[in-house]
Image 1 (cartoon, rainbow, N blue to C red):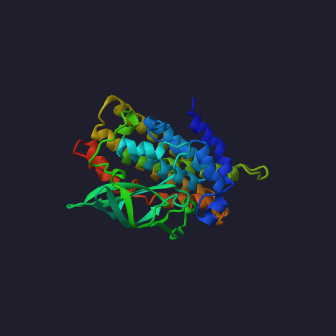
Image 2 (image 1 turned 120 degrees about the vertical axis):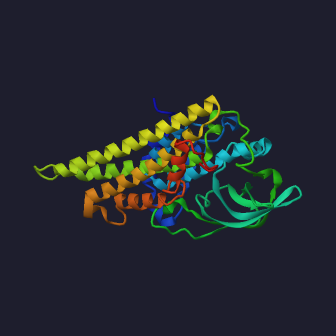
Amino acid sequence: MDHSLVVAARALAPTLAAHTDAHVRERQLAAPVVAALHAGGFLRLLLPAALDGAAVPPATYVDVLAALAEGDAATAWVVMTASTSTLLAGYLEEATARAIWRGPTTPLLAGVFAPSGQAVVDGDHVRLRGRWPYASGCRHATWVMVGALTGTPPAHVVCALPIDTAGVSVVDTWDPMGLAGTGSHDLVIDDALVPRAAMTSVFGRAPWPDEPLARVPLFGLLALGIAGVGLGLARAALAAAATRLTAPRGDAGPPSSALATYATLVARRDAAHAYARSAADAALAAAAAGTIADATRGALRLAAAHAAAEAAAVVRGAFHLVGGAATGRTSPLARALADVEVLLTHRMVGDRVLPSTGRALLGLGAPRDL
């Protein structure tokens, strides 16, 4: 039986699709969509159970994102980035995390892990400054979590702060070919003062929640979420192709070659989804048992990268299967193609990860960001 949040995501998808035009035009999510995400509990997917989060299994996480992305990829992407940012709650001091997530309304986080700023310790506070591109969902965020470098030699840290903190601003830079509705503008922080307790490190500190999801590799979950969005895009593209193939055309049905191509694309998408779910289940089982081996970490990242690549191949295949009718700028297939190509540029699912997964699978060691 499907998780209730998967069912809810499928029910919400048609409503999301009705807002896609506005998302592309405004380069941010519509207010009713943001409200629906809050009301539906979609911003608590990966929040630890210790903080009253849903802490859903990773395979369920993939299914929820795929269902949302089938309606609107930008919405799913913002849920993905906000959700993976909530994983950082387990690395903050417990009191700080509880203060952020104690209210009745779940904060929407805009997170950028890349260390694009400097954090200078000043007594009980940290002075933070820098510029972080790709801050997805920043137009709707109430909190931001950003990576920075601190100390000598420089060490990577993450700082959490309300987006209305003095010195924090959003610079309108996001005008991409796809995923426009994510509103992934630049976040600029100029000498903001952050409590020292709101700074942490995922490399120098273990998460405090004693629950299996907290032990699943953070970067594996991030990559898996990206793959989930891609899988939803692939399903939407196949649905658009199916509508075209089954349209009335007199006595003649679709050509055999088109039928064969469509069937092959369905198999590729479903196989990639199943592989991602299987690797996700294996990682969670290992986390529940204790420590996750390098080979399990590598398999999780490999499955996510494979699913993202297969999703892109399926969208391309569906686009070319329909042909000229798919080329209009507002065509669902044209938009899915643009969205999935932008998705595939994310370094967490790029080809660069494959050598590291190979090393992990062969028992040759794994980098800390695998």
